[in-house]
Length: 506
Image (cartoon, rainbow, N blue to C red; front, top):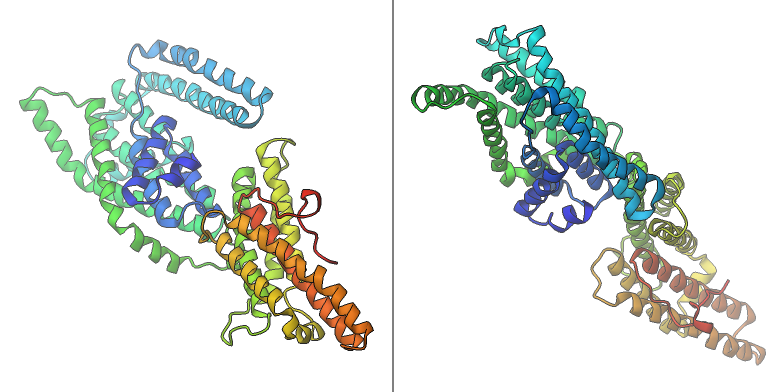
């Protein structure tokens, strides 16, 4: 799902199509919407892309299949058809690992959803014998408001507009409601669809709340369009009945729903403007570096690790910026990120990472957890060396260290480009080579400085300051390379003793 949404989420029409195509087989716009909200929180999708996906999900949701036949046996046939899928999925979920386990849980979940929906549809047949909702008044705004509210409540209780619409179509088929009431119920179902996403966004990040609010506004606008157009549609149905002999049945109701849902595509050109408006209404209140660390993502370890990635990448980028600004001959207007804020960000990342549920050793997520833990450890160490003490700062100004300082700047600049995705292919191999080369000045200069000091120049105190500065630059290169290596998904290690990465001097 994530790969499909992210791959096709670059342009409005692509995002709309991806939302529809992902939702159609899942038969649940709520599932797609909650997933999109999660991806906005974690970072893979931007707010405009998520809104375009949600619009497509609304459209794809109505392509669900209704079985025909005897209502008395429909539930039994539905159980026999869906129960095996749920059973196979349950066995996979219990016995398999990795993707097969996830597939099994998905199959079991969807199987149980439809096993539950079909008996509900069958139960609507008995409702006609107990009461006739068609006797309720259909004229006037009061009756219409009551029916629309009933459709909203039905969708909220079922947590599925597909289930609510399927139930409405069955009620129409069994004549528990007339056509006009069924149309108002369908409108209510469309308005009530965002409630699942709104519930999922409670307590979430600002991005999640923006997405949920946009979904509510979008479906409310669609509902208003439907309410305005329904009287004209009902007159068209009456005309078709009298002149063409057509029936006001489930097909006509499905056509009405398809028509007003499709009108939602007309809002695509305004998505970017709506996103900017929502960003002003619901601004970020927490630290920007950790804004993707939404506690709601902890239920999905893969998404939680993705959010950790983004927070680490942005924090490591700012760490590199801070280290660069403290090197000699930094630009006068160089931005110096607040080290206290960077320390707080790393602490929040560490806290969030510790709450991600563990996974089986050997699974891909387990390796990702190890890589992120490595990156977090080296980010802390890079923070420790971000601001050198005055004695080392004076030593860094010595011309002897100019080549090492130049190489440090190259490493920091390349790491920043790679972490934000602006570096060219092969940047990690280059970063590894630069980190290895930066260790050479420490190895070569140390013996020379010691020999010269023994001969009387420079002063021993000055020599010790220079050696401390060399060790700091070595650590900067080593601890800058590691976050780039682990967060960039690379597998290139710099050359070193017996194939190991060069160890920073301590």
